[in-house]
Length: 467
Image (tube, rainbow, N blue to C red; front, side, top):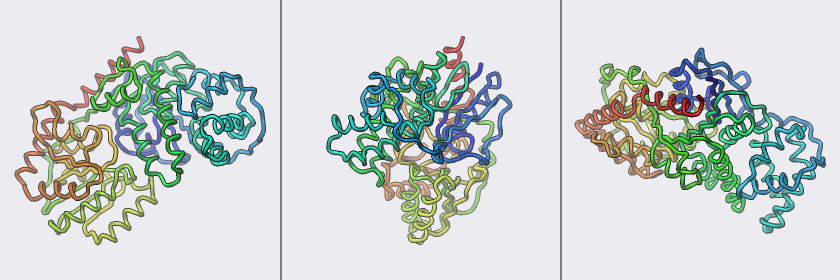
């Protein structure tokens, strides 16, 4: 079977949970041939792959969202839009139900000579003009024109690229990746499945609400637009999986038909982790295995470390993971570390995580949004308790759902650094509790989240749709 995995901003150039999942899926299904279609905001020419290529990875194709920015633009052209095509564009931008078949057919018809020319065309001007007249009369036309142009440009660039042919398409998020899965389904009439590791629209909504560069009256437009993209993926997908029940419920709330949904939890290869190899290093070692990016909320973690340091002066703090993805945010974190007068804080950069899992006493996660974090499962596999924000499935992993295995740490509300600090301190000062939580986490991951179980479920998913 030829499977095309479609990912946004991840594999193979960025490490993290989704990238690890993609690598693991390919490695553990050697009987299938994979192509990865990777959508990236940054130019990946010359970028180093963070993962070794499995033998069954036939090709990696990258869509760079800045592809056309140096192109010469011919403005004022006409593309002879039909009434249906014009209405499809208006509904896409206006945040109502969109005729995606019409949009896909327009972009794959060969009529568009250049995405930038289309966005500088009289047709696009007319679309924005009508939107301003009928739906956004309070918004200045010039502001609306440039805002909408920047909003739809990444989507149109993605759609404009030819899709690789495969027996099945598997998007690992909604957004642009989900739309491309839908496009492949429409173009080739092949099965399309969707896996959401986190709820993409909710993550974008949180980012947009906090964004300073989006004016207040445009925030609702942007949010509606991303919900529109998600509904495109839900509409075309044959099956939609999530990692845990609460995310499945959110998918249904957003608009995914319930009969399409199912749950396939993450799994990890327990053979890679040997709890007997844990080191007993002197002192207390607290670690976070994260990319240094805003959604992981490193700043809240650092503020909590300040409180912990007052109680446990010799505690060591490790921020374990790459920081190149958002260097400005990394510098802000370094500045905060200095301004708080934090000692013993180490930003490791990209390292072999196993070297740290062997001696960490407590794992910390302060994310604003998560799906089902692999790092928590990895920590549990080495008997490490975890304190995390109550996002995604963190509560289910740490506190247990209906399982009998007991607490493996605790969860706190997002951005409550003082509560995060208190839980870290409690675990630090109570060695027996820390040990018991670690044992509970180890039992839970061993019983409920082994890799072979996850792999078998995805194999069954593929076989359901490709006979």
